[in-house]
Length: 127
Image (tube, rainbow, N blue to C red; front, side):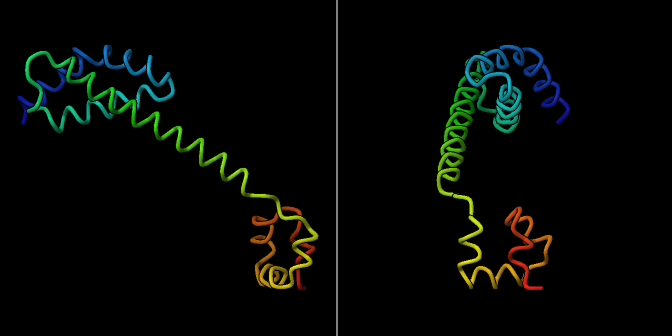
């Protein structure tokens, strides 16, 4: 295990900067360190697949990691937009008019109601 570790440390020291620069150009500063970490984690687990010059292999892994990061950020942004569009604020009129909602909210502690409906806990209180 000691020789494997030494070989991996040499691999990391020799190629960390190139992989980091590659990631910076593709995903930016915020995600580049994560891409590098995941790339070298894959390299540690799959070191037996690295033949010859390791840099092309590492950059291939980094390319796939970057693509995954970019897809995840697009999905996250899309979800954020959908949630923002769907979550309309509950007006006081709706909360008071719907008896079942008012009753359910009334069964909650005031602090819990405040978390769910800021500004409405006293309106929905049954006490």
